[in-house]
Image (cartoon, rainbow, N blue to C red; front, side):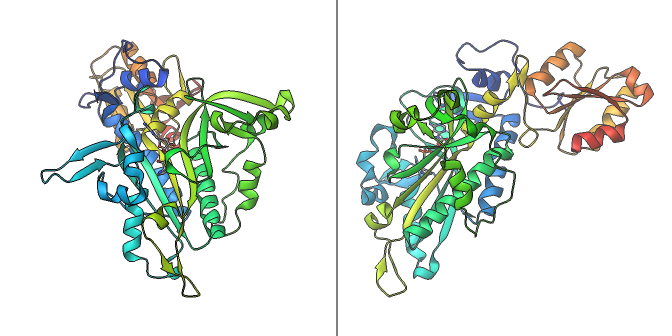
Length: 435
Ligand code: P5A
């Protein structure tokens, strides 16, 4: 993309309404635009990151054996009456009436709908286990939407749902998602720590929140410092095999959200090993047994012919919230520092002298060699403005090209995260950018 033709509206001023750094930077870097309280339009750069995040989520869900579907945003109130949640959900649910006076709602989550869909097809225990997920917009009429996409009213969630024959099998499905989540967040360069959590309106008695430590986080959390050194990408697990050694390792140390905090267990940990911090919840997984299958009449004949209600769990990732979390975790005074895996473009190419034949040619060559991966700053602007915008937008690499370098056939490559600079030939620069 050429900046001279792109819709990438950066702001120099700090927007007054933004209270935390990620929100400020998302507005300043032109990633999103608020259209109503807690509702955002995604501009080109923001949309590219949202898609990259979604793609990592998708790959790890598929790897763990889940299958992607796409359910609608609008649901019928009748479905929710079956589970009893239509009234329970209260004011957070956006209720809509259609032209025939039928009660509808904008889905805040999809347990009811997926249970109903699965019920239409499941014929016997041989149709178990199954795990279905989608990445779809949700609406929750939050009392206090705030911090930009972090607590929105409309937000993008990956929500997955598992169906199993036995409690044991359901716990295996839960562990598959537990491990898939560890991998998902690690691939985005985030350290997300699973913590014992409260189940709230979803239900059940087993649940973990995946939390990223950040001063601006909305949750108070308590954890053992060992978690800070765990590496989820050290090995590729066999998702069909026994995952308990991995999950046991992660649950063997104390980690809890405020609601689940146990003072006695906490005090038993030596003081120097305790970390109490603020955190951002980027994922939440639940095992709730037959809560929805029983209330919604989902059952299949088991191996002995007797009907069984499948054991279920649900698994959520805040895809749009992750953009805020990623920026909270990776920025400096000058702007965003995108991790390579989610960056909107791999490199910003800074043409320091548009109109200079040699400079234009070298920029053009680099740009052409990186289809859809480079943002070319070919604007008629001072170099200072280009440096500032490139730092603000946060591509992992900056390729700085001016007349002197161009004459020598050299590209100055800057790593956004560290500020390291390299003088390289076009080929060597390309190799580094492609990593
Ligand atoms: C799990 C999947 C559920 O809804 N049902 C389907 C279960 N869980 S949850 O914890 O309520 O939400 C899952 C994740 O969605 C993100 N999230 C939000 N993101 C932005 N704005 C919001 N208002 C918001 N509410 C929830 C969180 O990351 C949460 O972990």
